[in-house]
Length: 174
Image (cartoon, rainbow, N blue to C red; front, side, top):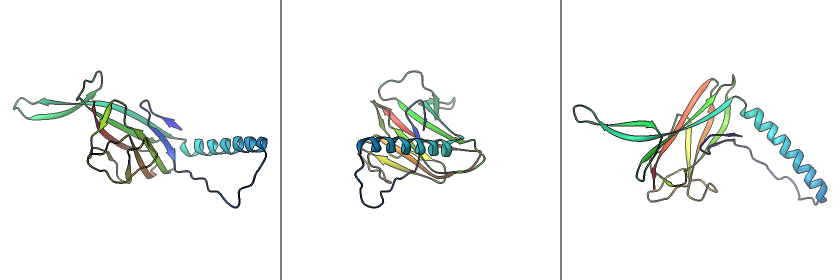
């Protein structure tokens, strides 16, 4: 797994299917089997994630005025934030490999002490976004006004070789 500084995680869409009737093995076999399965899954994940890099960058949204009085929004590196400050979280997923990566999910918890700004999540083409209000246990493909989101997931069906995908969202410091 790749982890970003701010808790984002890159995962592959891996599923495990149960086939046939459940068999009762003794406890020792269960432990050994779990270790073998886990080792094989980790190896597969490492191989499938090879060449992917995730960078998470927070910026503070500042509003400045130009000489003629127009308001301009500017993202500046976060040094210190106060209540009511808007923070912009930008993730960069970079595929440094020579082959495309498929079924990539970037998990991004909303940082504690902030509240997600509804309608602010964006991502590059070919990406869909999932929204969670229950700590990431379930996700919905649609936002709802008034909901308090805890996590976002960015789903990429494909990340082309030698390409960078961007995604992000805004949050307000409570």
